[in-house]
Each structure stands twice: as C-alpha cells, then as structure tokens.
Image (tube, rainbow, N blue to C red; front, side, top):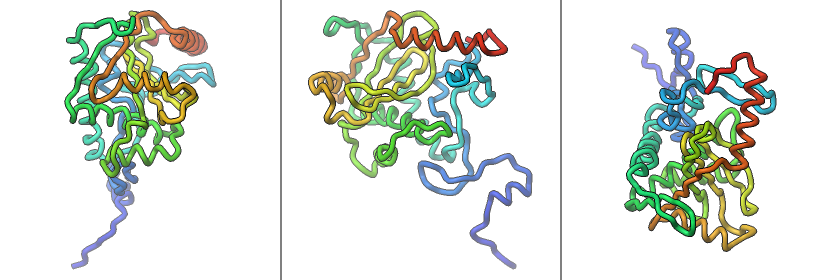
Length: 267
C-alpha cells in the first residue's frame, strides 16, 4: 500500500468539484482552505436594519452592487481557525461599541458631549487589537490600504510576538448621532492628520481615525491630548451631532454616483 504525503489539495478539490479556495492564510501562514473573511465585521454592517449595500466607485462615478458585498467587504484572507480567532476581537468590540455605550450617559468633557469607557486590562488590550486588526485586514485586500512596514508590525502585535506599542495605531473614536444617512457610511480610506498617516474607518454609528505612528507629529500638544483620550485608564468617545464637512462631501459623492447608476433605491 502506498501512502502519499505533501498532496496538493487544490488539485484534489478540483477533481472532486468542491467549491473551496486553497491558499496561504495571511495570519498563520499555512497553506490551507481559506474562507471569505470580513474586513469590517458583519456585525457592524447592520444589513437587516439598513438594507442593501453598494460599492461607491468615485473614479467611475457609479455604484456597484456585488453579491459578495451585501454583508460588507469580504475576501479570501484567512483560514477558518484564524478567522474565528480575530472574530473574538470583533465580538468584544461589538459588545463594547453597540451595547455597553448605550448604557452610558453622555457627559460634558472640555465643552464636548462624550461617552467615557473604562475597561479592564484584558478588555483594553483586546479592544486595541480590534482596531489594529481592521487596518491589518484592510492592508491585505485586492484594493489594499498601504501600511508598509507597519503591516508586519500589526500582525506581530496581534499574534503577541512583540509587545503592543501605544505610540503606534492610536484609535480616535467618534460616535455619529446626526440622524442622517451619513451616520451609516461604510468604508476605509487614508488621509493625514497632524502631519501623520491616518486611516479613517466608517461603519454605522461610528467614525474611527487611526494614527499609524504618533511620534514626531507637527503638533505635539494636540497629539498628547489625543493620546489622553484613548488609554488604559479611560476611553473618550465624542458625540458628533451635526454633519461634518466630510459627511457633506461623502453625501454629495454618493448622490453623484447614484444618479449615474441604473438603480436609484440604494439605502
């Protein structure tokens, strides 16, 4: 009897006609079956409440409706085991942002209405990891955000191969409460803030700004203030009750794309 080793399972699955994707898991590095992983977790997309999603393509000035995007952005990035591992971070963040904050009464802090979170040590560590994982996942997609050397640093932090460095990946949280469609935008894009590369992540009811590296900004006092908003002692979440210039710009871009597309009933 012959025993075969080092089988190319992609050929095997093709032979039996199975619909699977074999590749290298971006997290564990193993060649295995991959699943479609959520870049922005499905739990934050609120598909049932908000309806159908579309991909707004600003370059083409149109909206694409792809079935794969109806539960948020998904791509073959991870094996099931590693996807479940990151899913634990997603679940924690969802409980904090969508349930715990609803039980906190807003207070005025430095003339701004805010929610104040206090987490235990493990919750804080995993909450930070959640935001790092969003950037890391987004850097691996077919339309990646450019993280450069910080892509591998993010992975090492997620896997506890190096200690978390709080000078890196500073999340600034804002809760959107305008009561308009702009509260429900979903996406990730890059900008600069205080002279530093920053990524804006939008999902329903929240805007997250993640400053990749806080050192050597063009305004050290302002950066120090922002670092005081997100740390192990407290997390401040300002409430944004009026549409911002960015909201107005995004809304106009969406309307332009919608008017240039076959259907006009996307929410």
